[in-house]
Length: 335
Image (tube, rainbow, N blue to C red; front, side, top):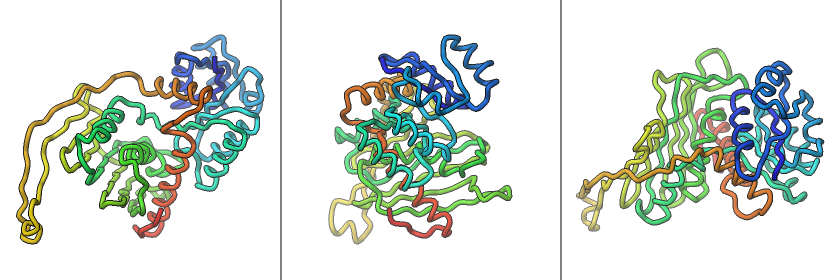
C-alpha cells in the first residue's frame, strides 16, 4: 500500500485526496495546507483519521508518507518537489510541472539520480476520449494527420500568479503532444491582457510540426460561453471532440479532400469526400482515479508513463517558448 501525503487542499486538492484515498494500492495518510481553518473545517470533517499540518517539512519527512502529491501554485512546485525528492519520496505534481525549463530539468535529473518517480497531473490523458482518439490514430483510422485545432475558453477563472497560457494551455499541449506523437519545431503565440495586468487573459498558440502538421490552441478567460472542443484532421477521416457533450463526445467524419493527379495539383482540381459520421464508444471511468492507480504502479513497478517528469518537462519547454513568442508579439520561437 502506497501511503500518500498531499500538500495543498484548495481548489484541486480535495479531488486528489479523494482519488488517491480510493484508488487501488494507495491510501492518503497526511494532508498539509497553509490554512489551519481549512484543515480543521474541511479535511478533518471529511477524513477524521488523517494527520494534518501547516508545516510542509513535517509531512515530507514523516515516516508514514511514501510519496508526495504537490497541489500548490506553480511558483512553489520546484522548492517543494526538490525537498520531497531529497527526502527519498516520489512525487505527483499538479500542472504545470514547474515555472521554468531549468527547474523542470533539475527535478528530472534529481529523480533519476535517486531512482525516484515523477508524475505530472495531466489528467486529460487518462480520459476515455483522449485514449480513444489515440487509438483511432494508432490503428490508422484517421490516416496521416494534417492538423490539431483546440479551443478551451470560459468566463474565468482568473489566476493571480499565471496568465491564461500557463493556466489552461498545459491541458491542450499535453493532449497535443500525446496524440501527435512528434515534437514541435517552433511556436508562434499572440495574446493580450485587458485589466492593467501583465498577465494575458486571451491567447492563440500555433505549433509547427514536421511533415507539415500544424496545431492551434485558443485559450481564453473572457468568453461568454464555455467551449471545450478539439478538431483533428487526417488524410482518411476527421473528428470532432466536444468534451462538454454528455454522450457522443467524439464524432468521426468520413470527410476530406483528394487531389489524385499532378495536373489536379496545379489546376486546383480537388475531389471532396463526404461520407458517414459515427460516434465511437468512450469509456466513462474517472480519469483522475485511473491516473492515481497508474502512479502507484509507476512508483512500485516502473515502466512507461505517458505523463512522467520527462513529459512534464516537454510541456514546460513548449509553454516557455510560447511565453517568449508572446513577449515578442508573435515572433517565431524554435523549440
